Length: 260
Image (cartoon, rainbow, N blue to C red):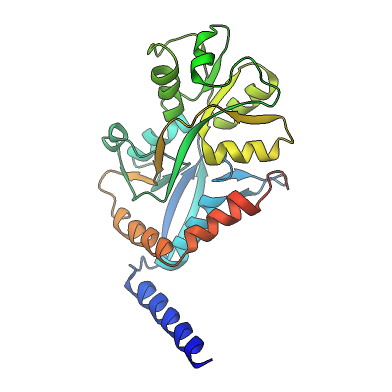
């Protein structure tokens, strides 16, 4: 019992030390923009409430860094330009950290790593991977312009032509999945976390096929030179250190059932 008590006390002191080392933003309002179309990172539930991994993580960061959050919504293709222009303080929607994007916005440290997968209808039998998909010129891919899935479709699956008519463009990720369900397209490329979320909610209507196609690190985005980058990075490190991010992974990727 004495050992257990000592260990508990040590854990509390370490937690307090970490919390004490974090910056204090003094109740500052931070305007966060998101898409609400990327489950389980951020989406709306059956009651229309905005929820998800990123919302929970942001709530933890706000509590520990002492800031308040005001949420706004926009489409993916408008998000990076809007944040770059300073319309919002921070953007979150499973944004892959890429060098070309760093020219327009600043990124936080990675808060999550994911791998890209091929999301298809549950009864799909015409192809089982990138090579067989590419070989059938009747098959179509849904993508959002400027995203990692778009460039993967162009350069890793198809012929490198960004105007290839086999790529059908949509404003939101949710719209690409709806197009897949309705048969307007045959494939959606997405990271494994979002893809598995849709599969779990589909009751057999969707599945993942083929090999994973690379690793992506996700980060929050800020206007260039933002003074929020350093405190948010400190907060992310604290959430990693005390197991909060691991707990969020369990909650949203293992325990949560889409559509509940």
